[in-house]
Image (cartoon, rainbow, N blue to C red; front, top):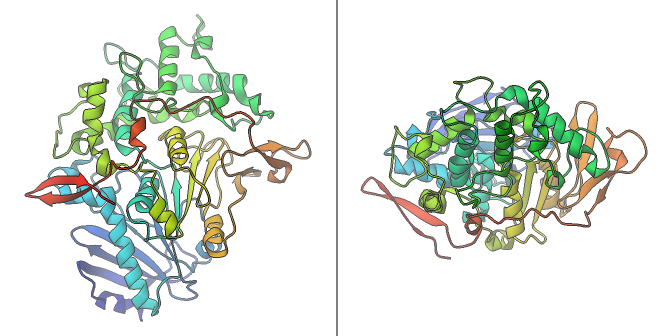
Length: 503
C-alpha cells in the first residue's frame, strides 16, 4: 500500500500519528511510521519502500528509555542495514522522557510496559503493519539491543519465546534491580569519606590504569594495551601506596580502588553483587562514577537515585530518598530486590525459546564501566547453552561501544546466517582504526600466531584456555539466576499487583 495509507490500518489499541516517505538517517527511502500503542507506548517504524528482504529487526532502548529512536547497535556494516532493505521498529516502552525515574510515580502501567510489555506489543503491532503494508509477513524476525536493550532482549526470550527467531543481547542489564541500586550506589558511597567528600578523583585513573597494564598486559602473551580475560589479572592497589602523590595513591585511595573493583559488600564481607564489579583494565572509563572534582554528581549517583526513588520498591515513590538511606545489609538486600520478579531478566529457563527454533547471541565488553561482565557470564553459564546460544566477550570494549580495544563490529550478520542458513557463528572481527582482532565464541580467546602484524586479525587463532577462571558466582543474590522467580503484573485500583508466572 502507499505509505500514507498506513494511518488507515485499524489495530486494537493503536492510534497513528504519521506515515511519510523519508530518507533521514538511512541509505534508501523508507516509510516512516509513528503511532501509539495504548496506553502510551510510542512505536516508530521504518518500512523500506523498495527491495524489502522480508526481514524484520526490532531495536532496543537503553537506560530507563523514554525515547523512541531506532539504533542499529554494532550492525552498521550488516548488508540489509547498509543498503536499507530491512524493516525495523522500536518503542519508548510506555513513557516519554523524565530520565529521573519520576515517570513511574503513580503510573503502574508504565512500569509494566517498561518491564516487559512495551517491547512485546511493539513486535505484535509492527508485524501486523508489515503484513498489511507489503501484503506478506516477515519470514525472519530479529531483536537487537544493548544495555537495557540487552535486558529487553532476554526478557523477550524468557517471556515471549515466539516473538523473534534471533535475539541479540549486548551488555544486558539483566540483573536490573541489583545493578541500579547496590551496584551504582556502591560506586558512589565506597568513594566518600565521613564528611561526604570524594576520596578518589579522576586525575588518578590514568595512574591506576598504567599500573594495571604494567602488571597484567602480557599475561595473554601479547603486550597490546588490552586484557583478553581480566579475571586472570592479579593486581593489588596497595602496590601504588607511597608518599609521592604525583605517582602514588594514599592508603585510603588504594582501598577505594579495591572496593570499586570488588563491588558491594555488607559489614560482614558478604558480596551484594557478583564478585567483580569493575574489571581490571577498565579504569580510564571509571569517570562514570569517579568525578573530576568535589561537588560533582556522577552518572552512578543519578541512576541509583532515580531507581531507588521510583522503581526499586513496589508501589512506593519517595522523591526525598538519598543514597545514605540504602543499607548494605542482608535484610536490606532482600527487601530491595523483590521487584526483580518483573523488572529483571535472569531466568535461565529458555526451553520454550529453544523449542521454537530461537537463536541467542550474547555479547559484552570486558572493559564495561556500566554493567559488570560477570552478570552476563553468570547468565550464560546458568542457561547451560548447547546449540542455540553463543557468547562473545570483547577485550578492551567499554559499554556497548568505545574503549581501548577493537570496539566496532557487525554482530547482526552472524545472527542472520545462523537463523537463515544454519551457519553456526564463528569469529567476529572487531576493529579500531587500522587495528583488527577476531573475537571467538566464549570460552575461546584469540592468540597471536607469531607471524605478521599484531594489529591484523588474520594473524590470530582461536585457543580454548586450559584452566577455567577461578572467579565464581558466590554472592548473596546468586539465586536470582534461577527459574521460577518471574511474575506477571497488572494494575488493580491504581496499584501494581504481581503474581508468580506458572508454566
